[in-house]
Image (cartoon, rainbow, N blue to C red; front, top):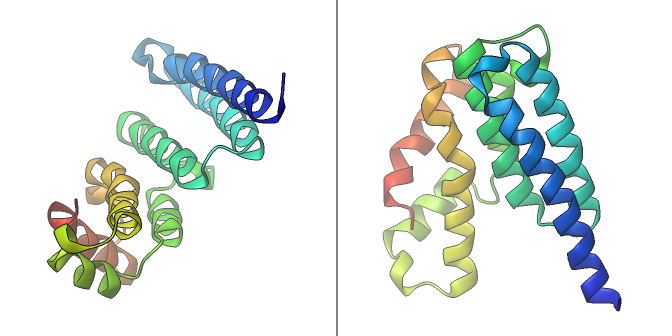
Length: 156
């Protein structure tokens, strides 16, 4: 196998492990054990990232699973399952400030492909917050998430 083919095969192997463990983590019949399956799934995503899988894509997947488990099982003792920590991680991962995204969203159809993709990344990273916003502590971070979620319908 040559370079690109090897990298693709490596990423695909890691993503296969992610999908398998994700299925168990999403299985409501598993109860609290779902959190263990999620950790294994996250380790597979880490491997995919190290092999070249886009960080933003891995983060979107991680955030969705974390939000699902927080919504289904409630917050846990671990920061991984803390709604406020997830909100902080989402805000940190966003590639634009709220002001930049708002300005770009106003005329997104006329923007270059890379800028439209960046707006789409923001939207994908924010999507999981819908299911747990009601569990966030009132304060500046909750306000920031609420403002982003107000903007989200205007993102491509």
